[in-house]
Length: 221
Image (tube, rainbow, N blue to C red; front, side, top):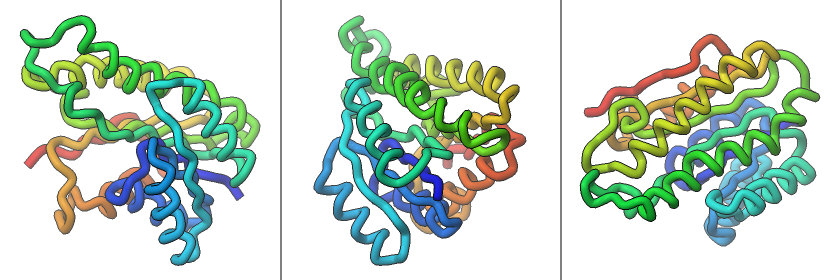
């Protein structure tokens, strides 16, 4: 059995992705900062017949993140799919003229150092699984492609993450490892035909299985 590791797992999109991939036989590694919340979500998924376990980590501390991913693979099985989708902190989103160099440290740690550390940790295992198995999924807000003057930190850091994802797509595609980015404009909306968590989870499943799209964008309201 292989595993999807969801970095930034919560009760919205993360839970929906866990259910979508879990229904297909994946074990689910839930990763975020709060072990108690992860344990509660894992227990809920286990009651539904999905093998899931939580692994606490801080994405701004690379060693913490790589340790969680290593533990997840040892506990649940090889990581076939990595999803990087933590929710940015509100203080990352300042107006451009109020943003200082110090204000960019957190966003860069969060959106660039974190994914680079995660990819380096899971890549050897994905290569071992063989061609057309491994997938790396990035989930970002609309500022990744259209910067906003009021959300400077995420605009800059998401743009860097998007560039990293595109470079990975070019290089790893030659090895049969899929790299895709889902851009969600605006809010995730329960009950919406396109932006309900379950609908978005379906898109992520399609990116993993169809393996023919780098970037898919869901427009803002």
